[in-house]
Length: 387
Image 1 (spheres, helix red, strand yellow):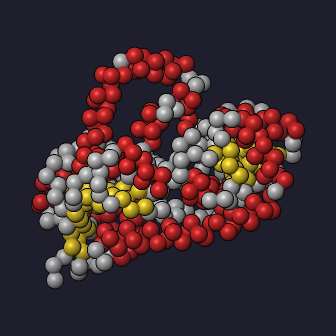
Image 2 (image 1 turned 135 degrees about the vertical axis):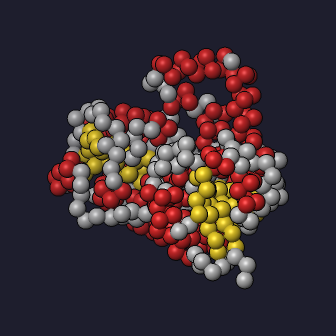
Image 3 (image 1 turned 180 degrees about the vertical axis):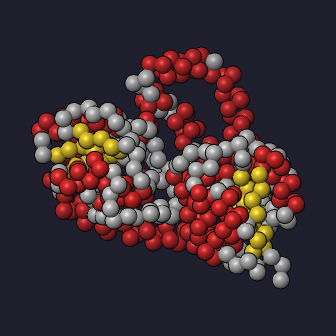
């Protein structure tokens, strides 16, 4: 029986931690569990010029533990040559944009590409950078200079990104994305893509759960039993945390029993503001589980994990009403505009007023999303393995 040869892209897991990389990691774990050495051969593509972020996706681990073949693109310098050498039947790419710097010529095998969102394109097109970087004079100055010579810069950046999406319009390409919103974004910005675009929900994140909390400050906060609203990845400017912090300061003046906990931002802004650094996946899970409510003031989102992680524990969700969020979360959260402070202020009061109802809504919505995540995992894993 002929083996089915699979080339799995590890480059999408390299460089830095992010949701798309964790999606690839979960898919990797799932196909390894289903892998049958008699009917499949797995080959992994990586780039030794990029940092390895996750041990489970490192060539050393995969070669040592499973005897898989790992091919360094930095040495081979040609994806098409690798595909030809190893007689690849299917090439899986976990984050399409990560192929921007590589040649995609002469790739004719069945190729599955995931475009989670078009955040860079949409942020620039809607000039959201002026909101995101409003508190940084240096960055604003650079953006003004960029706008002055925009015609030159956009020519090269557009040419670079079009290289990937031009490839994605080939007949041998199967495209996947994480929401109907992202699907429509692909149609809007790249109308030449006529391929079928399948919507798949990214799978639940893997949490290496530990009963003990390792961060001492978090342990003290939970032990104190204070009621805290939580914001995650607060240092990432597009998550819009400073907007929410300024509103919560006003709210806390009127409601001194409530606190705001930000993860990833170390500067305390007011008396009832608690801060934590980035946490382990287990500690973060504890932080969410013991929170009063999650605030998600993001300016852009192709899917959005944090609200789902909070819904699992029946936490009310207070989040911005942009992009894919209403599609994924339906009527469970309290929505607000991420541009109007009064709208968030009103939402904070609504969470306190309608807490039991909002908690129940989260618990009802979570299994619906979880079911879709599991179905999506099976669909894409089985498609990669051709089973």
